[in-house]
Image 1: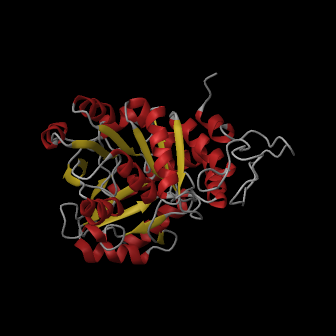
Image 2: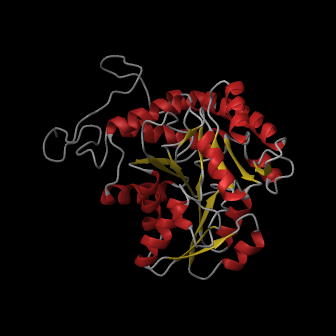
Image 3: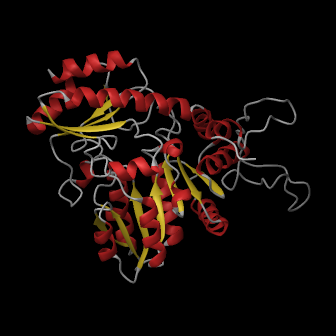
Length: 379
C-alpha cells in the first residue's frame, strides 16, 4: 500500500516495541550484543558501529521518505559525504561539483579528497551545456545541490540524471535545503541522496547528523560496507533525536515555506535590498525547474544589500529575533553573513560568495514578529 509522506515519517521503521508496546523506538544505549552461540546473532546485531536498533529505525525511515532501497545514518552530513565519495570514487577519478556549493563540501573536495587524488571542477549546474562540457572520461560523479547554499541556485535533477547516465557517472544530490518533504531526487533519477540531518530533518538545532539514501540496493550495500569500515556512524541518542524531528518534518516545512514567502515580500519592497534570491520568485532563473521538481520553495532566503558588505554585516548584527548563527533548518529563525561565516572556507576560490549577501533560515515563529524584526534591522 502506498502511504503518504507524513504517514511514512511517523511509522516507517518504527513499529511499536514488541515487548512493551512503546510507540516510540527505544534508545538502545549499547555497544555490544549477546550472541546465541558463536555467530548466532539476534536480529543481526553484534556491535553498534555495524548496526544499532535505534539507528536502524532512523535508517529505515529515511529510506522510506526518500523512496530509496537503503538508508544510512552518520555522525554528520560531512561524514556521509566522505563515505559516499570514497565508496564510489578512487584516486584519479573526477567529480563535477556546483560552483555554489556549501563551504564544508568544497573544503572536503579541495583540502581532503584532492590530496587523495580525486579531481573536481566547479560548474554552474543550471547550465546543462556547461556540465556536459566539463565531463571527462574519468568523471565518476555529478554532485548536485538544489537549491544551492547560499545563492539558492536550482539544478534540473532529471536532466542531470540523464546526462550522468549517458556518461557513465552517478548523480549524487544533496537534498538538505529542500528536505525529503519538498523534493524527491531518487524519483527524478538520482542515484544517491545526501542529507545533513542536522538541518530540516532534525529540525530543532539539538543534534548533528547526516544520512545517505541509495536508489539501488547493490550500491546501498556498498555504502553500508564503507559506513561500517569507516565508522562515522550516528549514535543511538542522536538517531533517536533525528527520528523525533523527522516525524514533524511535513508540518514544519509547510510553516517554514509560508513564513519565507512573507519575508520575501517584505524584502522585495525594501529600498536597501538590491536583490532577493528565492526560487519561488517568477523572475528567479531556476523558478520553472523548481516548480516542476519541488512541492514548495523552502524556508531559505538570501538577499543582497545596497550598502555592500558593511551594511550586510550591520543587518546581521541588528536583528533580535533572528539569531546570528551558522547552520539552518531549525524551528528558530537564523541570520548569517555567508562570506564571513559558513562560506569563509571558499574565500579566494571560484566559489567565493558576494560580500553584500545575507542568508536567512526562516523559522516557524509568528510571522508578524519575524517581519517586525527584519523591518527594524533593515532600518
